[in-house]
Image (tube, rainbow, N blue to C red):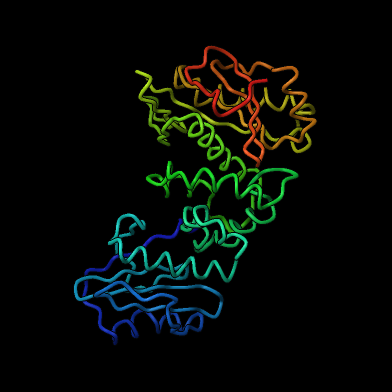
Length: 336
């Protein structure tokens, strides 16, 4: 499985003839390639090449007198195999900006329904144009409403657009976007679980916390978030889990689904961590009747403190807590 889209940087000298010989020709021989005019003017001082393959793959190549950058969701030419990989944030801004505009231009043609969500499409660009995951990630957003059951696609996308337009996760773009995965196959359960971390982040951000993902702890594990606030001396750690609805798992009731999933998490990472972290149990995959049963009984989840909640694409979140919660979430959800 290929990783999210990243640049390769070469410090060798590249002429037009070498680009033709070592980049274009190998792609043309294998896939049938054509040079196409870029959508946008390239960065000052750089020559740009846009190469489209007969199978739908795309490659961008940028060079000046000192360096060259390759970005492609196709087979990397052998002349670039030994080069290092870099994220959009790790290369010259002008090059990254041009490449992202090129990709977003493609998205406007290939998936206009997704491109209209500026921040979401930009944030997930490394996955939406990855070699293996570009089709599955778009299909997940389109056909599975980003993990919200019985919800219109556009409402679900708008929910995450509102989070991402805050910029709260911009510094962790590759870390968070990569959670969606680059498998060529759609796995709605796994991908919805990944989006639960974004849902949890939205709750924390709406409650005026700054979030830092993937916090390493002394056990060698990483917990999902640290919630930071200038009003608190200690910043709680948060771990997120998502129960599968009872209709899609062995648990035959919503209560059992919540308890079993939380028990799996608490007997693993949280037990080894030794306590102190807040467990977020995201029931956003539950139907109305399933959540109503959970909200009425408010079952314990074998870990304290914990928040069990359900978010809707409208932004409305209901939940209940167990134990002494070191977070003030009153701005972000309605307690039941």
